[in-house]
Length: 476
Image 1 (cartoon, rainbow, N blue to C red):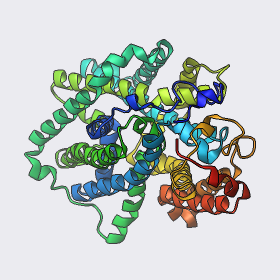
Image 2 (spheres, helix red, strand yellow):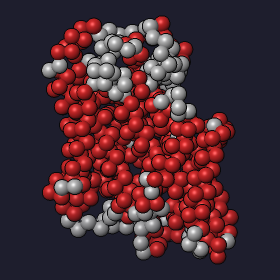
Image 3 (cartoon, helix red, strand yellow):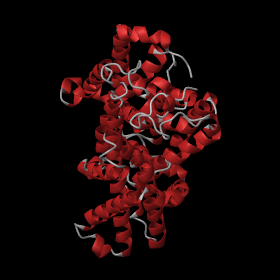
Image 4 (cartoon, rainbow, N blue to C red):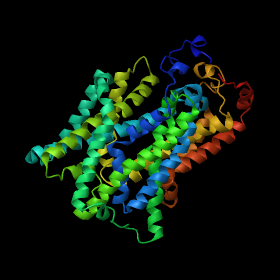
């Protein structure tokens, strides 16, 4: 394997964290990838993703089908982008240099970071709601005051900021408990609602609210895009995990089994519980926190809400702070430390107003999930097209860490990738502004993915610079 450190002692392009993994580090088996997906799927936002389909009018069979199909689809770019990580041992920030250029890679990294900031705000809002719900059980009069929810939200946000300032090591020991906590909370809800609804029969008897096929399809296709968009971020940076895979088979089989299975199994809890809420309360209650607030057993409700709180803190720090903090720091390492990057993440998360993103199931699906899928779908399309169609999975690993090589393009930026990205994003999001083209927004991820991939391949194949560099491509 080429050792880039020997050719370029440049900390802006190479350090120990960005270096290709060595054979001794590649220990992840099929089981590890299945376990990874089960751990990442067991969180409140997954539950709410499933429950929002019921709240939107689907019955449980339609919701399960939509979730399964969406996750099977997103498995394809997930596994394709994972290939380079397993083959060359390189992480996402290095892999994306091949298509966007050594400096241009900062752009897709920033798009991913901004989305992570939004998720940070959403998780902070969920944590704040959990504290407020616990307050409602312990001191209802205090919780009834208008300012109490905002104090709880800002208090939980501040806890996250303190953890970031002190370093993520301060909660590392809790990470392994995140998934079990969520499982306990989910099963508590399931069995409570099972008892209240009188069994699984009534729970799953709630009919579809769609009276015609047209009405169903009008809701189905945007929902399918949202299912794909849910993991759009990770479909980009999955090489960060697969670089530790023992071989390609481990990551392919592990992800093909783990992602759809984990999402369907955990989503079923959200679907069953929300269906039961329709039977019990006469309306779909899509938020598990709202449901827990209806518990008449304070001790049970408090324990379950504490589980949500701890799990949310773990997920937020691990998934939504570490990556964007590093991305912001990478922009200007001399001026932005990891700690400062975390502060930027936190304040941008506030600025994105998560209370509006999560105010209704419609805002969550049609606003947040579909919206950012239109930004990240084009990036995924460019990465897949560059690696498989343009380069046929062949990369010069050393050149990914070296200025002046085939990935230098024009001053470190590949203008063809930028043009393809703009085309894809514009086509995916134009429906927000031009009503007659709104159907393009409903398919935002798909439109952006395929259009950007096609534009990128066409421009790269016509590029003399690209044609000259292709014969030199070798494996490490």
